[in-house]
Image (cartoon, rainbow, N blue to C red; front, side, top):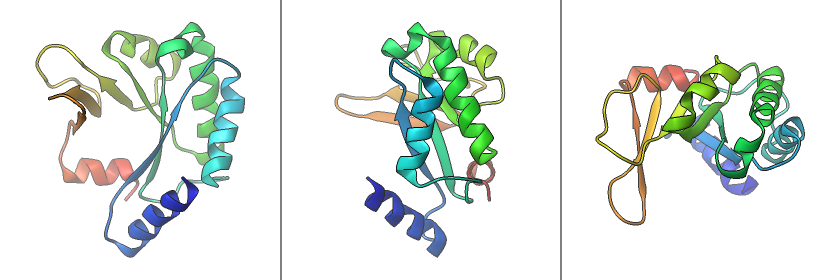
Length: 148
């Protein structure tokens, strides 16, 4: 993972790519500890460079403790100065907005049509075997999100 992560960083630095996102699937246990391990794995110990964003996935067994999401997101923000993107299902969006109101959302919306949602990113299924992600915005909005 670290090798591929660094390759993507080189592409950003060279100008051939705008954004890379590392994604951590929260598990039962200490949220701050998971965030620390996530950052250590990425080699991130301070402010994020432009083109780098982090995401936390809050679903499944992680939902048993809202504190886990709060603590992980808060720790990442304290270290990097940037709130992580939070990926969750549509039904959990209100809870995320309450727990980490400054974190951008990546909403998994598996049923119904894809409508303008008022969250930065929406993930939906459009066929067997893969998902699609949509940005509610234009290229400039993506560049701003990426820190450019």
